[in-house]
Image (cartoon, rainbow, N blue to C red; front, side, top):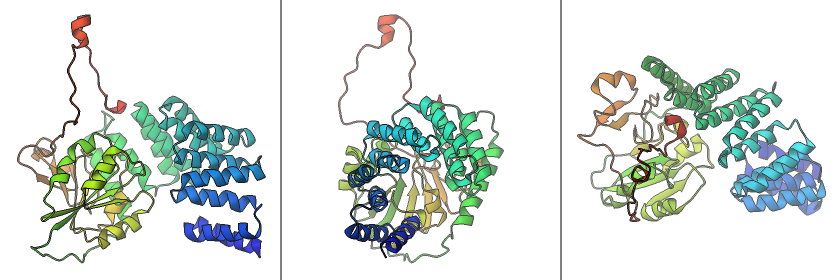
Length: 406
C-alpha cells in the first residue's frame, strides 16, 4: 500500500499538483520515516512551492540516508540556489557530477548558477557540455540550448546566441520563451533588415496565438464613477533601470486609478517593498503559469493591462496572448514590436516610432506629445568629483549598460 501511495504522489508531482504530492509523501514518511525517495521528493516540492530552506533540510536528510545518489545532490543544488546559497549549490552540483558524470541536468543547473554569479564564460562552457550530454533527449537539449543562448547574449555574442536559440527551436519549435529570446537577440544584430524583424515578430505572435485562446469579450463594464483598474506586468519591479520610471505610479490619485502590479520574479528588494507598500494591489506571479496568471488578472477586473518588458528578461508574452484585459499596451522596457495581435497599442512618441516606421509594429502607436517617460533621480545626494580627464589629460568613456548593447 505504501508503494502505491508513493507512486500516486509522484504522479501528482509530475502533473504539477504540488499540494497533493506533498500530502502523499508525508503519508508515506509517516509509515516509513526512512523512505529516502519520498523524503527527497518532498524536499523538491518544498522548494518548488517557495520553501527553499525546508527543501534543503529534507533533501540533505535524504542524502544522509542514501549518500551516493547523484539525483539527490543535483536537487540539493537547486534548493540551495533557490535559497540564495550559490557557493554551496555549486558544491552540490559538483558532487552530483562526481557520482554521475553524464548528468546533463546537473551540468546545466550548475551553469545557471555560474551565470548568476557572473562567471559567464564558465557558464557557456557548461551549457555546451550539457547540450552534448543531452543528445537524443529532445526537450531537455532544447531547454539547455535556450539557456546557452541567454548566456551568450549576456556575453555580447549575439550571433552565437541567435544560432543556439535557432538550434533549440529546431528541436522544439513550440518553445515560446526560446522564440521570444531569439526575437530579442535580433535587436543586437546589425545586419538584420527591419523586414526580417517584423516577419519574425509576426511569426512569434502566430506561435503565441496558437498556444493560447485569446478572449474576445470581457466582464468589464463602463462605470464613470469608479476608478479605472490598471495592471502592470513586469520582471523589473526591483532595483533596475525600469523601476526609475515607475515612481509616478505611487502618486496617482486612487479615486481615479487603481493600480495592480503583477511581478514576474521571486527576488524582492527595497524597491519591491516600496512598490508593495505604495500600490493598492501587488501580486507575485512567478510561480504560476500564463493561463493561471491571466485568470487572476481577469478576476481582478483589470481594464487596461500594461506590459513593461516586451521580449526582455522576465516577460510574460504568453499571458498577454490570452488577452485577460479589454485594452493592452506595451511600454518602456522594449523598443520593437511584440508581434502579438492581442497587444493593442505601443505607448511612444515620434522618436520611438517615427510615422514612416509604423509598418514595423503590430501594435497601434499611441503617441505622447513630447516625452513618453519620466525618470526619477535617486534619493541620495551624490557629490560630483573631478573626472579622470583632469588627472590623466584624456577622456574616458564608460557604460553600465548590458554588454550586448555596446
